[in-house]
Amino acid sequence: MNKELTIVFNSYYSEKQLFRIIKKIKLFKILIIENSLKQNLKTKLEKKFKNVEVIIPKKNLGVAKACNLALKKTNTKYLFLNNPDIDISISSINKLLNFAKKNKKFGIISPTYNNEKIFKNYSSYEKKISSNISCVNWIDFNYLIKKSVLKKYAFDEKYFLYFENFDFCLKLLRNNEKLYVVKNIKFDHFGSKSVDPKLRSIVLKMRAWHYNWSKFYYYKKNFSYFYALTKILPNFIQALKKLIFTLLKFDFFRSKLCILELYGIICSVFLLKSYYRALK
Image (cartoon, rainbow, N blue to C red):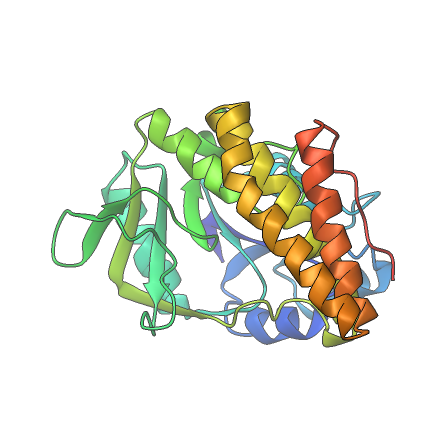
């Protein structure tokens, strides 16, 4: 088993996805932060896979706190932070690791999607270093990072969902850390497929509230309060329009989502904490 790298999964009711991907990457140490708090999942995974450790926190930590907890629980030089709904080969992971060892001065390194026509996992801004390597100003999750870099900068734990990674990447850039994507190292990300489909209602509620709360907080923290207001105003207007439309259609679930969007914006504007949790 490789002793230099720990693959980290931030999981929330992602049992099927975890079993699928772990079977493919059994040569590496794997750490799972299981935010569903399901003790039986820890038992099943650790019994079946000797390279897997599952941590069950006392409460749902969200993304930022889970990543910081992974930092405390690992002793390898490198961490590969991931969502469970990915597909990547051992070969691609080894290539990332080799790139990291050869290029010691970097913040984070990421593979790229097999199909970039739909979506890229990095910013549109690119500074090409070579035909296969680009320096960018933002990378989505699923990247390799040195433990020392994560320890130095860490994720802002005021975020629960959304924008914590924008914030982290911006922090790295402002401290002159390089964000690399390697074009000839590929993976697939299925997109919003981590959570059990039975929990779709909870996911949509959490997304509605936290996306808007986090967007305002991100711009307020990194730029200014008034700039954040200009960025969140279109979301507020759009949510109001959708609320009226869904009420006229008697679509009360969608109406509730619109109310949660507005509620998230109001809480963030009034500097309240990111406290909302959907239970059912």
